[in-house]
Length: 296
Image 1 (tube, rainbow, N blue to C red):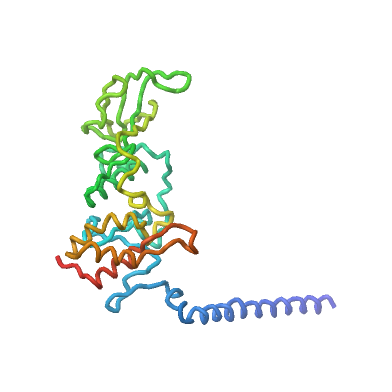
Image 2: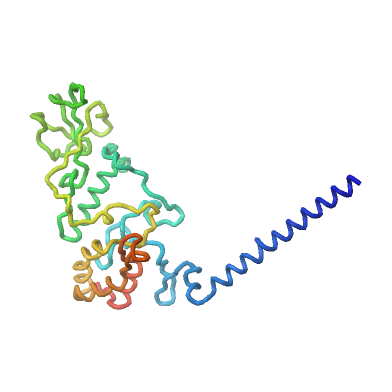
């Protein structure tokens, strides 16, 4: 009697396993696949792929870098926002952010340039200078030197009750490796020194210097910071507008022609209130190549 009950229980469990396997492993996937083939959903379900001359060249959902083999920006293309996904950026298999926060302001200097690790501040400063030079605008930002590194001092000396160093004995520009000339000659009457690679200046009070750059910089935030996923294909309309003059000159067309394409690839806020207006760089550059091919 007990054996019979045991057998019935296991047969019931086996039947439940087979039924659920059929529903969740066969019927449901087939139903989802069938719905995905409906008009209007097919392209999205296949990855929103983009083609040129019959060849798949990317996806409208994943950004790309428009640079040469040395990583230099190609003048004829709109540049995407920076990416921290993978070694060269925009790697779908290594989607991530840099994980650097606002307190990352001191670089790790080394005699070997390949071992230097930039802080978030110096990374932003370098990107802003690069964009400014490329687009012929002022890329200066607060807390950045004119050479594009973080303007940060280590102020060494006895501290008061509030931790301030009122009478420093030594001041070091921690992000400018010797033999660089520090961005600031003196601080509180003390000569500012360049930093020796490998030296530890943590004993001093770390002081970022605001500088004389305006907070209203022409280079927008999305031009110098990566997205959380590292795969964002969009930039802000402001960053797109900054690049129009360069694109028009490189392709020998008018700025109005470029601006019309930018407007065509600009999306507003989702549902009218979510997010910000955005420009799909991948689709925009593809459209540029089709309408106004670049001739070197």
